[in-house]
Image (cartoon, rainbow, N blue to C red; front, side):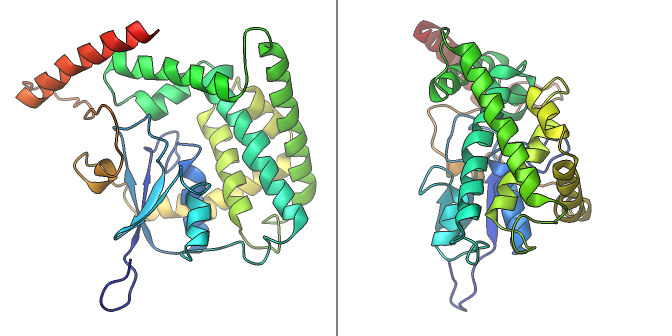
Length: 299
């Protein structure tokens, strides 16, 4: 991670693409982006469009160093443990901070997962993860992920209504507790940002901007005006200011952002301009048809 001069190479966050007016519309990538913005460490932002099924995204890299989403509890715990950036050193021993952060990362994370894949019409999920893929592959991967999420949340045909009520009830309790704790402060603890703020700000921005207006979770959040104001103020300072001062980087399928993530299939984003297909694209189409047939057999 360090060169001969002892300086660390610039960090690069590889995330899912921006949409809904957010720098990245992935509910796992957005808190990492915000955490790095809070830290004021310079970093580059790249997007991976061709591996929507990878649980390694988001990840942060610098030279030979990589912190993956699916290792050691996630990107932020990796960055803290490896001494890259730790915003929690003065609060990690406070029991209330630990319990509130656990609530955000469990109850509210479950609620986001439920709404994104089960509770809403699925348009947000398809736009974030699959809109750059050929239609049949994106559709199949979407339905497979819906089944995965139902298993993770313990949802069956027999308990679907009960689990929905539990998920929304816990989310409402979490919002109430967070609203009481925050009051009119700018941050939850010690008047400075921590990973708790990064996690919750990412959650709120995703709920307000990426979920439809019919979202149950969105309506529950909007009943707490101080949480909404908290998110709007921090968004202006740490998100909007950065977006307006720099251009949005483009994803290159041949870059390290693509090469770092292994997958059993790949696809390049579709071009809007009509042109004759290359031999590589024709070969991909043939493979896509085979993939489609095999996935249908799995169902």
